[in-house]
Image 1 (cartoon, rainbow, N blue to C red):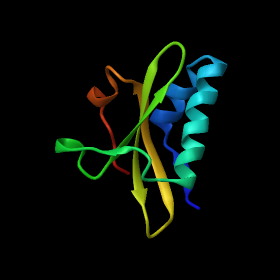
Image 2 (cartoon, one colour):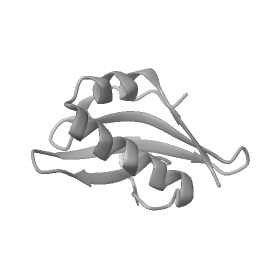
Image 3 (cartoon, one colour):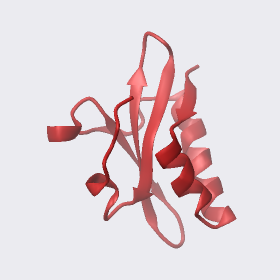
Image 4 (cartoon, rainbow, N blue to C red):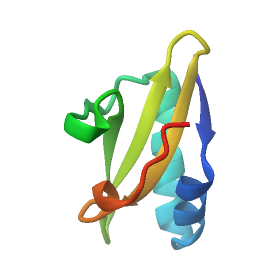
Length: 93
C-alpha cells in the first residue's frame, strides 16, 4: 500500500472547506493509497501528474497528485474546485 503525503497547498484548501466536504476529499486521498492509478493521467504542462475527480453535494473537486512508485508514495500536490484547480501554480516537489 502507498502512503499519501498531502502538501501544504492541498492541505490548506481542504482545511478551508466545511467538515463534510473535507471528509469527502480525505476519503478520496485514502482511496489513492490503495489504488494510486485511480485518477486520470494529465497532459501538457502537467504531464507526469494525475487528477482525481471528487464529487460532493455542493461541488466537484479535483485532487492533483504524483505517484512515486519507488518510494510507494502518493504526493498530493494540489486540491481545488474543478473550474480553477488547473490554473493554480502546482509545485512538483
